[in-house]
Length: 373
Ligand SMILES: NC(=O)C1=CN([C@@H]2O[C@H](COP(=O)(O)OP(=O)(O)OC[C@H]3O[C@@H](n4cnc5c(N)ncnc54)[C@H](OP(=O)(O)O)[C@@H]3O)[C@@H](O)[C@H]2O)C=CC1
Ligand SMILES: CC(=O)N[C@@H](CCC(=O)OP(=O)(O)O)C(=O)O
Image (cartoon, rainbow, N blue to C red; front, side):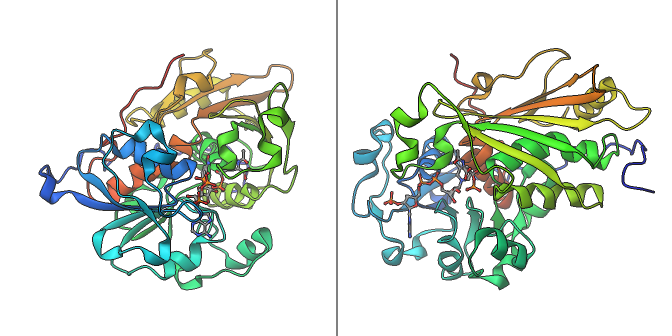
């Protein structure tokens, strides 16, 4: 069958692993967690989420320039938590931990994870283990891969799409924020051959926390506020990650046009995606397919027809809101997907994956509702 032949496939069973729980409750049985890069945005978001996690406790935190400082001194919003002071990674005692969230800049992570005890379970939030083809990684990231052996072991952790592999993984490559917002609607539609593999256009927008906490001129309030700009046009490093996963879903070489934009808000992300519907398929079919695919999912909500997703309605939560609209003029479908880049786009999905790796219900500690307004 050709790439764009229309054929509705049976829906996948959505959620076989949602209800597992080992029942561990006592403090003595808690899983000891290390957060590497705890002084950054995603690291602090892991700490915020774990504050109400019944089975995980943080026993190690690391930083680079801020090593030696307490968490409360740099994140006063976390002052009520009893957290260990941050140490440099080289001084960290990994015998204290069972699992690690690695929230470090990409490029620094491969060597650090390779140096950790191999008994540790790791969710890596960076891009260092997401691209299966090491050559492609080296081309897009312009550096040699520092842990090729580990790359083979890493599981790409978009939870709703790969949860069985995540559950048995030791090392999970947590997806990028843009790729998460794009794959959740597109993978099921490509798998079911309801949309064309050609001509996919992704117009995406991110809040500024997506760029991390380190000081950069381009992220100053004066540069960001009261305006917006595209960046990484036709060369953003999330292109190969998105194409890798869409190609796997459709068994065809998918190419996308992807343009990210920076907008003046602290957190939140929207991807507006233009796709060609295959012959004999309607926008209602796309809506129905996505609704059925995600009906048993806790964190992916297909909104009722006509309701426009808004970043405000997922802020601070692990939810993704989706909807599909018809463009009567071009015959295309317009898909809108919103997430909080720091939660479903990073730390929330990381906790969701770690829950699965530790055999807990994947929603444990993640059911906080979005903040409104
Ligand atoms: N922000 C987002 O929305 C998303 C981010 N990601 C990815 O998650 C990772 C972390 O991002 P984010 O939290 O935003 O980044 P930040 O810049 O906010 O934080 C980076 C953290 O890493 C530490 N660090 C920096 N350099 C080194 C080093 N050489 N060795 C050890 N530690 C170091 C920093 O310590 P110090 O503060 O002391 O310098 C800080 O704790 C990145 O790979 C990013 O691409 C993924 C999805 C979304
Ligand atoms: C606004 C902004 O700068 N966003 C980041 C993406 C953050 C993210 O998810 O990406 P990684 O985990 O792949 O680094 C960027 O465009 O590079």
